[in-house]
Length: 421
Ligand code: ARG
Image (cartoon, rainbow, N blue to C red):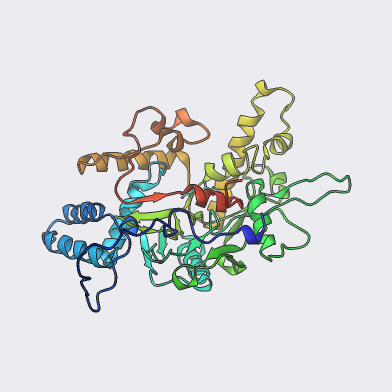
């Protein structure tokens, strides 16, 4: 993909070219100092707003009846096409969006989400600076804190900013040509496309290319800063805590030279609250060791390290029935957990996190709420049946209420192919 192909504006936010209705046959009513109402199709859905405000009220016992706020918001939407959440509404909405995340096993602490309200920010350099500040505030030298930073929303007349990266910290996938003329991927194969995009924008990868080179942030501005071409920003090294991996029983493991970043911060999902959409709202929790050991390092289309680890362990890799893959995945995950623990960096394990999740389910049931769950994401990628979350059914994911969502355009940008190619 070339920089010229880059776009800062999603199809879903471009003001449509649909012709305006013909003027009515009556004198124009002049409404001085009232902003012109934006076209209907881009106005916030007032019913979604009302539904959200009623939820705020229902979950805040003792709160004033919501009728007054609902009427004010309806009037605001009528006049401007959107409305501005109060700080309390924003924080509640973001927390409930986490509570509604059907794929997240770590939801027990949804009320404790730290919300950074940065709704005034639209300029690309300020967006990047907020991403870096987010990393620093959530990392806390390893005492990882669940945090969301909410940047400017999409407005009827202008899009909010967009962060192209899937996560604030990810490793480049380089494709240098070897002496034999073959391309070998160095780094994370998932980000070969994104790395290419960053390079086409002018980013220079470190030389020689490494397996764990932190990618730059790629940002499109919002509002008056909306432009066709996104900008890139290096993430300062001192904002990225990483853990070097070793194994509690195998000294050779450290020689593999593996490392991983401490904070998983998803940055390309939009946060929808009561009809208002925040396209840039990076959020993080903390890692569960299986995500790194049994997926990022194990998946055939990621670092694909099972064979190498199995060789280190002295396993027979010629025959699947020795279960060398299974054994290597467990040892890799153990190494992740051991190394994070030794470095004082928050990390969950799949046994403890499963029990906490069952506690969350009980609490939600006691509160009279249904808890949406996607079984295939909740069950850990190793030892599924050894955890209690495996052995039951759940309420299906829902599509209403405050929610983190992933647009197809955002998926494509995150993989470096903004048109899905
Ligand atoms: N699985 C993703 C990764 O390895 C992170 C997803 C979010 N995980 C979390 N624990 N909050 O990077």
